[in-house]
Length: 272
Ligand code: SF4
Image 1 (cartoon, helix red, strand yellow):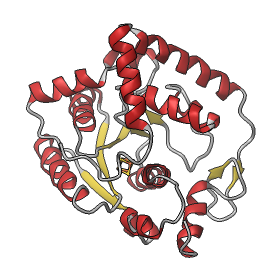
Image 2: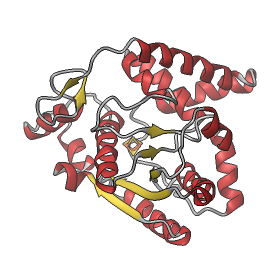
Image 3: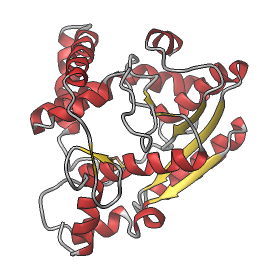
Image 4: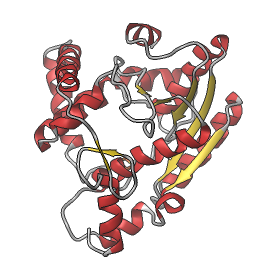
């Protein structure tokens, strides 16, 4: 992780970092390692948990995060969809009539929730626990969905193009998911093992199996694909068009109405 941080210049002396912690092995390991790395460099850490409102799942995760951050002596803040948007993810799913997956809605709203949390806590970077496997799966999902524009977000050096958006870093992006799992076990990190009830709605699980099968047969293919992801995302950044501002919330958007406000409007009309 230190090598990735140095290679892509992810952190600076004295940075104040909001670490997104979900209660899973990746985010708790990220917090543990950042805590070790950052302490000698006067960087401040805040743990941020987004409570999407997924009953029977998120409650346990919040408890785990609370206990773990207390053990590390790191301030922990919870921001919920209910407080920020007026509804939980479960509420939206009850209204849903289209085939849009829970993860698509959740991902869009959570990204914005993290930006709001980061602004409120006055951090200048948000660290997320995306590992090498996550990056490759997201790349493939975006490619298959025709969401080419989102591929640029996978670039480690992408800079925020608006004061509303905080710099994002992914220090685990070059590390295999299974190595992080082993690290969490060896350190005795008490992470959540229950999975989200919506996790099989999208195609991520299928893509994970395909990429794992390829890596098994052709060891190293994950790293070479990561290199391609970085190059493609770099090209997309260079080709960026000027950003507009969403007419409803003033956040940067490629369209007149950003995807968050589009979801909020649909929820208001009870049609999503
Ligand atoms: Fe949200 Fe999907 Fe993750 Fe569940 S699996 S927390 S719905 S992104």
